[in-house]
Image (tube, rainbow, N blue to C red):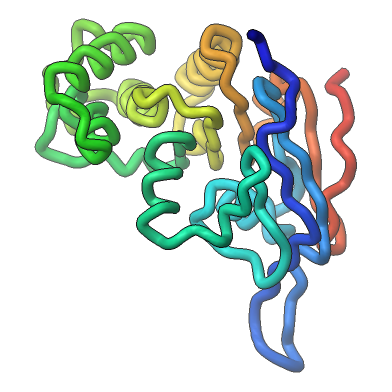
Length: 233
């Protein structure tokens, strides 16, 4: 059954502060946010408003001071750290401005890492990695060391690694911030194509309004509140 559009995650009454009295900064202040399966969403706005903090809370890389992070009605904040690690590895794919690939290893070896962490058979993981590298246009480059690839190719490897476990969500923080316009446009198109093909939720933090307008919705953060999403033009 196609459950696209069903609630995947709900953040409720999320509060996140930095600093100590009297210099406390409220990044998020009792904010609610609902994420639906298959949605594409851009988090936009000036630097320092909490965009990356929100993304990290969604991906359980950071914990709020208060509130709940519900994934299919399970409060992720009640899980142990090892359980959260399994959740991140299997249900969430991360792509960052810096690709964080392992130098000295091939594209294939980098993409295999999440599957090996999940203790899947090496043969299965090799097949998954090969298929995903083919999908992102790197079939002929899968055995090249990542330092021998171009910047755009390296980011494609990072996307393949993020998606090799077929996660529910792809979270991307300035995924094309270090790329030239041609390579950035290519990655933007790839992300939207993969969303349609795989049915995964995509949330991107970006200053690139061309990418933001490719998403179905956009949100921003003002005075600690996540403003209601609005449809793209």
